[in-house]
Image: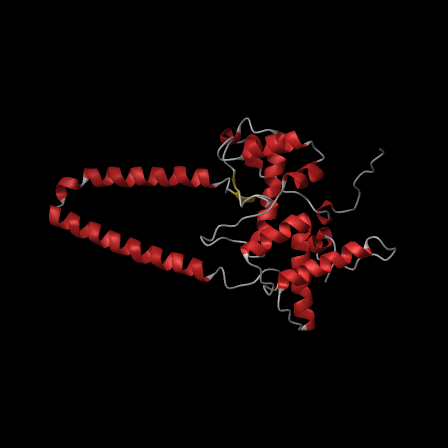
Length: 259
């Protein structure tokens, strides 16, 4: 193939996959294969979309769906290679950058993508704890037991109140909102799991389309899962005809070309 040069065209106009540089040259990730780094970056991007669509569990943790078949297709690799790469990232078999959870027979696994920077935060917190502990040891003889007990009591009280406030705010920020850009598509976790089996990687596309359609027309639907399935099966029928489907592709949604 004969590729052209870049002249005045801006490279930023293209849709890039962002690869964290620390995964490439960081000591903590030494030995991680290039295929695993690329796959993790793809999962990281999907996590951003899942967070936008409020795909979180009851603990506020973002989860995604990314099947082995989808990895094979997007990376043009064999099934054994796709499974090996996932194992390399997995917390039980590999470095621990992802956690896979089985939902049951015939249902796709959900994936929790771990924060690659959190390991550095833990180290910093451990250092700060050690520093604080050393400071307390130096001054321990200068304080009475009564003062120590009162101090511990105050610290525990503040800790409980601060964390109570923090987690209550987090809980209120999730769960009540719907999916999609306008947060008006409502699906249960079981609905999402069932739809993922049928629609696979197209599910987010249909959620976004339904969200935009409801917002623009003001229409209401009794069952959003049934609506998405109805649209999907209609599109399957259209694909056999000469007429093109009016459902935007995932790439069009990602670029905003459906608006």
